Amino acid sequence: MDVFEIIHNDHEAVQKILTDLEETTSRAHQKRKEGLAKFTQEIEPHMLAEEEVFYPQIQDAGKDETEVRQHVIEGYDEHRLAKMVLSELQQMDTQDEAWAPKLKVLKDLIEHHIEEEESEIFEGAREVLNQNQIDQVTKQFQQAKDQQMQKGATA
Ligand SMILES: [Fe+2]
Ligand SMILES: [Fe+2]
Image 1 (cartoon, rainbow, N blue to C red):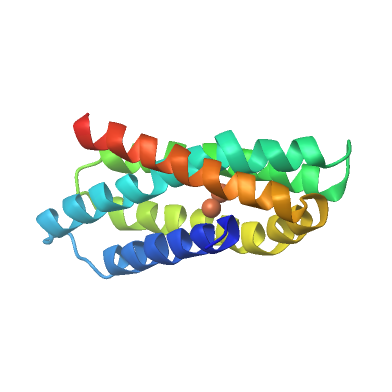
Image 2: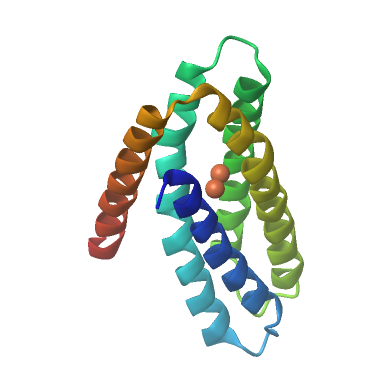
C-alpha cells in the first residue's frame, strides 16, 4: 500500500463513522459519545501525519506558488477549521439540540476536504514526487500515524 491508498482508506473509515453518527438521535447519548471518540482516534493521527509528512514533502518538492502548493496551504486551513468544530462538538452535551447541526457542519467540512485532497492534492503530489519519494513518504506517514496512535492510546 502506498501513501495514497493509506490516506484513502483512512478517509473511508472516518466517513463511515460520520455517517453512522448522523443517524443518531439525542437519545443515543452513549452511541454519540463512543462514535465521536472513535472518530477522534481515527482523524487525529491521520491529520497529524498529513501535516507533518505528506503536506511538507509536497511543498518542498513543488515550486513556489504552483497550484499544488496552494492546495496544500488550503488543506492546512481546512484541517484547522475541522479541528475547531470537532473540539466544539466534544465539549457539547450530546443531548443538546445543536449537536446534530454541528455534526453536519463537521461532516460537510470533512467531506469537502477529503474530496479536494483526493483530487487536487493527490494529482499534484503525483506530479512533483517521484517513486522514490513516494516510498519515503509512505514509510514516514505510517510511522507518524502509528506513533500518534500509541500516544493517544496511553493518554
Ligand atoms: Fe486526509
Ligand atoms: Fe487532510
